[in-house]
Amino acid sequence: MATILDGKALAAKIKAQVKEEAATLPRIPGLAVIIVGNNPASRVYVNSKRKDCEECGFLSEEFALPEETTEAELIALIQELNGRDDIDGILCQLPLPNGINEEAVLMAIDPNKDVDGFHPMNAGALFVGKDGFLPCTPYGVMEILDEYGIDPKGKTCVVIGRSNIVGKPMSIMLLQRHGTVTICHSRTQNLTEVCRGADILVAAVGKNHTVTKDMVKPGAVVIDVAMNRNDEGKLCGDVDFDDVKDIASAITPVPGSVGPMTRAMLMKNTLLAAKKHQA
Ligand code: NAP
Image (cartoon, rainbow, N blue to C red; front, side, top):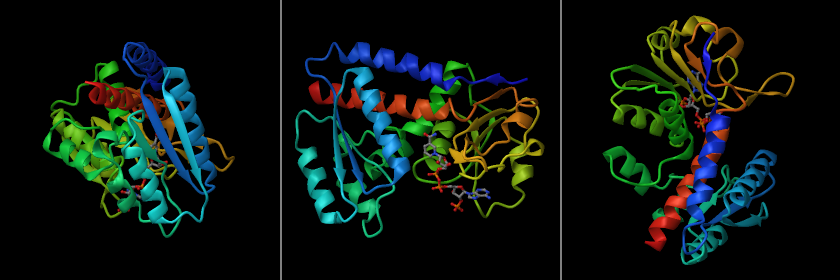
């Protein structure tokens, strides 16, 4: 039976540390969260971010804009927030309604306030190994690995998914820690075979049963980033947890591991932004 990688407990520990450090700053960290339209999942995420800010003693300001908001209006709000001294981090909840160019919106956020780590300046910094804001989900995965003493150095790492927010940055972070990394996607041939070679397997696809027992090498570490719904409407990941836990050496449950860590890393990034702005 695999070790269950408890990201929930680790997230609580990180948030407690963030709160303690935030209290020592001359000014409390401030996070602005923008939500456009009525996507129910986005609403849940934004509510949790507000709760996390309260827990860490941050200023949290929410901007709920109607579905009809134009790209120009949204960018004007971001520019106003870029100029505010009490706001250290700006987060625009994705996805945005049709008609708004996500890339243009993310580009408008001051890279020094881009606590999601999605701006090309921060993505580029990660790529070349310079300091910047790390995207919260892969950053959280790396913290889980560190907490449990799982060192990617020299290991065969397979990441399924190549999105800009999860798969790509995840691969770069594992590479920087000297993993030998393969990135898989929807056109990958022989996915089972490739995955079976992995010492560390990260699934970030968004489809139930993407990773079945036959795709996992005995003793592998399996990280499930996905947040899907099963036929009963319950949250689940990409990995067949019940089968895979019997052969993996360590595994993240869904829910309760990568999700809470993503939220904790947002708080950590906001604290970092506040420290930089107040330095
Ligand atoms: P995304 O942008 O939709 O990317 C999914 C990736 O999976 C794509 O690269 C796609 O390949 C690949 N893919 C699709 N079908 C595949 C298949 N059959 N075999 C192999 N690869 C396949 O999704 P995302 O934003 O990265 O998110 C991925 C999952 O993580 C979702 O479930 C999302 O909800 C979850 N997520 C969780 C957190 C968290 O806090 N836990 C945060 C962010 C995302 P192509 O590039 O070829 O299309």
